Image 1 (cartoon, protein in one colour):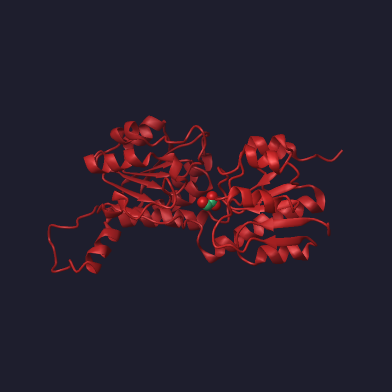
Image 2 (image 1 turned 60 degrees about the horizontal axis):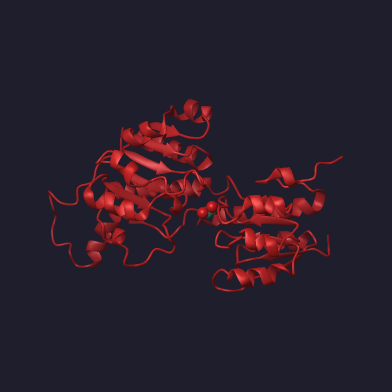
Length: 330
Ligand code: GLV
């Protein structure tokens, strides 16, 4: 193993470097304050055998045409929409991600956004800074109560499950969901009901997106969908900004097709400071901090490193996205 080199494409918690080094791998770390350009990334990657990548690294067909020599990619994220998995598989490169360890942290942000939007918290905070808090306002700044409302979850995977748990426990919300497959555990534990996509968008008081970004979900939440939602509803997205159409969301909020929105992910990222969403009273936006807890980021660093170490140790990759490329023993 000693001759293998790993490139970590941004500075991440030190545990990853420690684990990789202790396993006998040579580690190169990109020291820059932001992601590399793709050309820089390719130049650097040509010098290594494995990549510990982040979501901002563009690992597309062109990248794989230049870096087909890689043994393994350990992505420091649960999402991997920045990676062309088909191209990686064609090059025979296993790609891994970091599920579970960030589910609590990300669901907490979805839950926090839901609360912040329902009570216009971010907006009210800004009014104090602007010197606009003059007196108690009996008829202004009214939000609404979440207890007993219907939470619709789009994508009942690991993060969606934690969101369901939070909302059931805190507000006894009625949980409905739409997913590629039924999630019996969510049904049993949280009384979640599987519904069609049409029913989900029509019935949800709060609609929280926890799906992956794929060709099926890209731009899915658009004008047509917002028009079918309740005018009193809140749209929450903590998955990927590409799942909603931001111009249509602005229009829906302006027209009142929906009541509010909470976003931890935007399209594009970063969001421009003059985006009209940032001035809307019923909107809360965060700069993609879903997994930003010490616990989650350390967990992600551990998993990403472990996927690479396991591969070099015995050919196994615990969190492999394209396991077909792994050579099975015998
Ligand atoms: C963060 O967005 C992740 O996919 O882990």
